[in-house]
Image 1 (cartoon, rainbow, N blue to C red):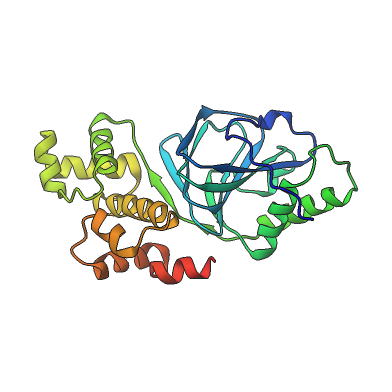
Image 2: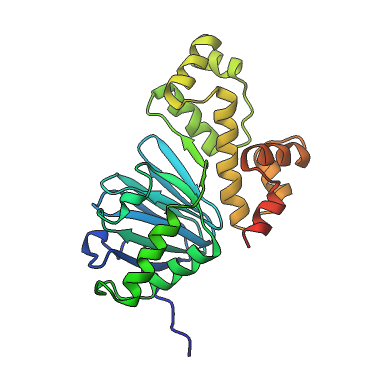
Length: 263
């Protein structure tokens, strides 16, 4: 008989209570849910099994596409948001064991072995002993995670009021296609000044910043099951082909192949 999945609410687990090197849990949600900004000493790994999940840290928004996870180092304030009908895994890793992982927030690809190890550890009690089978699996997981490629699903966000206005508008209406010149006129500044401000605050040009937002929204909505046609329309693209080209340029593959490869 299969073990039933543990599906607590998003806020039912305190990473500071872990006992072994790695403790984990599975979470399922049937409505949109957000865990407000919080911090704990453990590093946190968030992997989506189905549905759309995003993590926000200071000045950055990270998407969690299929077969990827977001790594959040310990002592880093963060918030997690999940859309309707999401299933995800969370691991909390003791600081001394997470030294092999990146020291900044990032999206990490997940191999089949890593995925199965994560799933297995979420089923185990957190009070396992050194030398136990779970401890050995946790050690293998950390070694394998340190080898996984990093993917760039980061959307820079800024607290600068004028850029906050732009990003809030884009999030409220992703089909907004105003150009740099049109935004600069709306904000009462020159195009050159706005262009420099965007680069200074985000590290990206205006166009790249906008496309990165579109990729983040596309990842979220395609993960929810929206069609490529619908996502292209929602983002204001003149054609599906134009949207697919943008997606391929940033994600490395067209959306159909990208999600098929990630099962």
